[in-house]
Length: 247
Image (cartoon, rainbow, N blue to C red; front, side):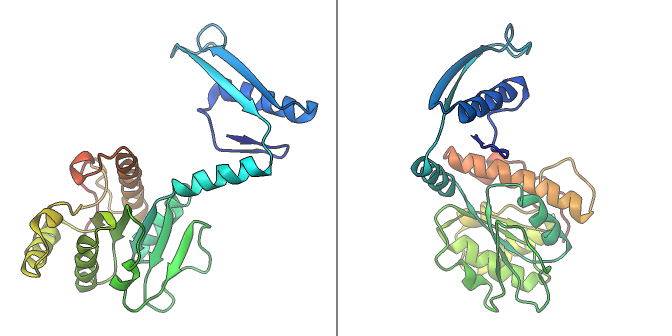
């Protein structure tokens, strides 16, 4: 967590401990100190029932340290390709603005994008939408929700054949998935790749078809997938596939 005279960036867990850590950081900034260490017994010292103890190291950072921190944060950012700027795509982008994903938002239709987008979003209006995946960073995620099922199929085909795309999600029903599985197999996509397609997208338990509800469900699944990838355990089987999205 970074603490400045104007505010904070990041978190070490919230609650009373974080509040005390912020106060200590501000004390160091005002006093001209360089470093301090504080140990907290979560029960006796902070009145928290979770138990255990935590040591917090507070260091006044120079420009080089801040640059190193920024580089580390950048290395942990995963690229997410979002195909489609319809109602669900727009709702999803707003939720993903609060996540570490770098979102590459793709839609070739004129006027498809809103006039303003979050800072972590790059816009691509390429006519060849599957071609956007050329040069994708290793470990990227793709989510497909365009206005056209034929275009969805072409993009999913490209995603499943691209080794840099770790996970591909597709908006749609179980019927849409079955039809896509058949057509992808006929096109020569390996069966193990087809089996990895997440469709329907979104965590289970949400039946609403509102764009915001589908977006929230999908964003939660994407965060879970990102964590699984970082642990080296990512596969569609690790995240619930009982989705809420319809075709």
